Image 1 (tube, rainbow, N blue to C red):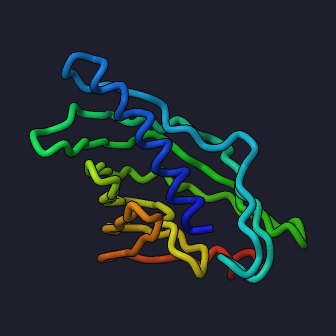
Image 2: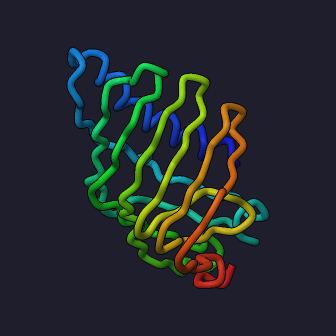
Length: 163
């Protein structure tokens, strides 16, 4: 499941990076999509029970800069992303603002170096945590990920949903 989120995030972020090359070396701005059908987080991976997540507001945009001499591509993501996380068993839900902002450095080998500022959800099972503050996070080419550092507070969404 962590790999699924990593792949989805990678695909969304790389969508914008393709535009930078086509724009003749000028930065581009592209929407950052969230799956229209939502995301089911299966029980036992993040929370004890199934959690369904859907975007209720998404105006996020990626400002993508042309690749530098090393092939690294920088993206700055801003805008609003509000999600609703629902405990599938009880129907209890919570609305969360995870609007960031954040930066992504896309490395030629597929590594994503992400720095979250503000409210965000660095995907790191087990647990479903919303952070407030600075989080440095990396997604490796094999889909594995790790939080390298974190400052600020965290909210356990599983606990909020009784999951």
